[in-house]
View 1 (tube, helix red, strand yellow):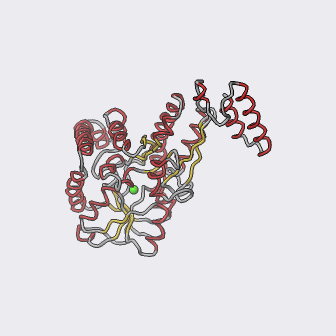
View 2 (cartoon, rainbow, N blue to C red):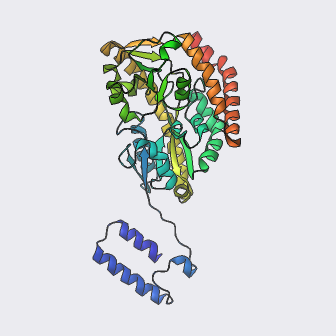
Length: 379
Ligand code: CA
């Protein structure tokens, strides 16, 4: 108990002098307790060590600072956890590049230099190609279907098995809903118009775009605007009207194409260092998981409401031309998507993940044909 008490005193910022007084006091008490050396910890005396009751974590994100929706979600998550835990679990959020660059978030959490991260699984295809499935699959599941698969269809268990290889625990912590196909300065009328086109498009969608004759570039959010403006890329997808309006793409691109065939409902993830998570008492573990689940739903709600407002603003105030990708182009992307997905299963676990995803998607296809899809067509 002496050791824990000292740590708590140290945490509230005792100065060097009083800290050394406290250390001297520990030495005296320890000597009185039976002559053990002061540097020995409690376990050596056979007493149980009280786990710390206060946790201070760092959360690194792949998002620019204060980006609406994606960037503000981890801030809200941290605030929710703070209130629910009565201040026992404090999470400080760092935007991309504040602590580590966007694409080093996974490694930072895996190595434990940050306890937590917020990003998207398709950024980690270099770790495991199948990881992208846990963000989104071209022509795959919508937000509603992803949430059903993850939380009631075995998806989350498989995701945890995959990330477990890296000492990381994933949780769903956001979804943007169906995205837009992206911003172009050139009309896309046939698959031939994609030839040599340099586009920022990540994940499996990027691989499909590449096979369709384009050049797929993966860039973090903070680098997209300048890259498009200076001609480093010819086109870009980002998220949807809400985030795209905030980035100002309407100022540098003419056509805004739909539908987001490549991202029909991407899951945004919270990732937690396994050792850090295991060190939490059960109530804080539950609070963290529950707060992630709430953030997961809240982001979708926010995007759905704000996307609708922002689309109207883009068209009415900025004169953006909204265009649908031609069927011929969508057919080409669909055909290539099936090939790319099949090739992502590069080992036994990846195959199990792909089988589970495919089986669930097929079930959803049948079920939603007579529910969501039939209803939206009838409305
Ligand atoms: Ca996107």
